[in-house]
Amino acid sequence: MRLFVSNPLARGKGARHLALAIALATGTAMLSGMVAEPAFAQREKKERKKDEGKPQYSKEFVAVYQPLSAAVNAEGADVASLKAQFPGLLAASLNPDEKMVAGNLIYNAGVRGNDRQLQLQGMTTMLESGKVEADQVGRFNFIAYQLASALGQHAQSRAYLQTAIDQNFTLENVSAADLRIAMAESYFAENNFAQGLDYLSRAIANVQASGQKVDESWYRRGLSVGYTNKIVPQVYEVVASWVGDYPSPTNWRDAVNIARNLNSFEAPEMLDLMRLSYRVDGLLEKYEYSDYVEAADARRLPREVKRVIERAYAKGHASKDDIYLSDALTQANARISSDEADLPALERDARAASAPLRTVVAAGDTFLSYGQYDKAEEFYIKALGMPGSNTALVLTRLGIAQTELGKYGEAQATFGKVEGIRAPIARLWSTYSKQKAGAVAPAAAPAVATGS
Image (cartoon, rainbow, N blue to C red):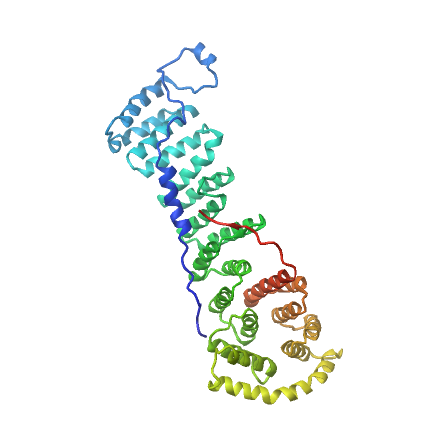
C-alpha cells in the first residue's frame, strides 16, 4: 500500500505559545493589595472579639512574619538566601489568615527571585487557606496552573486549570475555549495522547453544541498528535468532525488517507473507502484510481470500473497510455453488456426465499455498483437477517445505498452500527451523509470560536 497524505498536518502553535504569553501578563506579577498584612504583634482579647471576622494573627506568627517580610521586600533582597526561612513561616501559620499572608509573601518572594517553584508554593498555600476572595479564585488557580505546567507538574497543573475553567475564568485575550485547549495540551505535553484527544474532542463538541464553528487549527492540532502517534480510534473522531466543519476536497482527501495509512485494509474495505473518495472529489493521483479499480475488479463490477477510469481520463489524472487502466477499461467494456443482461435473473434469484447468502449479497453489491440503490438496499437488508452475514460489510454498503437514496437519517443510523476495522470508514461515510442532508436543508453559518 502506498502511504500518502497530501498536506502534512502542521503542529499547532497557538496553545503552545498561549501559556507563555499569559504567564508574562499574570503569572509573574507581584500580588499586592490582595491580602491584609499583619500589622500588630498582639491584640487584647476584647479587641479580637470586636474585630471578629477580620484577619487574625497570633503574636508568634507575627514575630516570624514581620522580619522575613521586611527582608523579602528590601531593596536588592537575596531571595535565595532567605528560602531556608520559609518552612519556619509555614510551620507558624496555624490558621487560614496566617496561611494566606504567608503564601502571599512566599509567592512574591518567588517573583522577586524568579523562582517558579517558590511562586507555586506560595500560590498553593494561598489557595489551600480558603481565604482567596471568591472573584480571584479563578485567577489564582490559573496562575498556579501556569506555574505547575512550566515546572512539568502536569497532573497538578490540570487540577488548577480545571478549577479555573469551573470558575469561568477568562482574560481579554484568553477565552474559555482557549483554556479547554490548554487542558488538552497539558496531556500532550506528558505524552498522554489518548486522553488529550479525548479531552480535545469533548472541547470541540462543547463549542459545536454552543452553535459555534470550531477553529480549524484545533482540528489540525488534534490530527497532528493523533496521526503522528497513531492514536486510534480517537483520531477518527477528530477527523470526522474536521471534514464535517471544513469539507474541502483537500481535507476530505487527507481524511481518507489518514484512515488508509492507519489501517491495513483488504480489497472490500478499500473499495468502500475509495467510493467515498470518488464522491468527495478526493482522487487526484493515478495510483489512487488504480487502487480503486483493483479493489472493484472489472470482472465483478465492470460498470463501476468504467466510470472510475473515465473520470481519471476526463480530469487528466491518468493517461490513456497507462497499461493497467487501459487493460481494465477494455475488460470492463467487454463485460458490461452480458453483466447487465444477467441483472433480471440475479434479482429474481436473490429474492427467492431459498436464496443463499452469497447470492443475496452479490445482488446488493451488483445493484449498488449500477446505481440501482433501492434494490441494493433491499438485498442488503435481507442479507443482514441471514446467518453468517458479514455484518460490518453489509451495514457499510447498506448505509451507502441509503445515502444515495437520500435517506440520510437512516444512513447515519446504519453507519453508526458498524464495528471493527470498518468503523473509521463508516464514520467518514456518516459525516458525508450528514453533509448531504445539510445540503438539502442548509442552515445559517455559525460563528467561529477561535483562540486568541
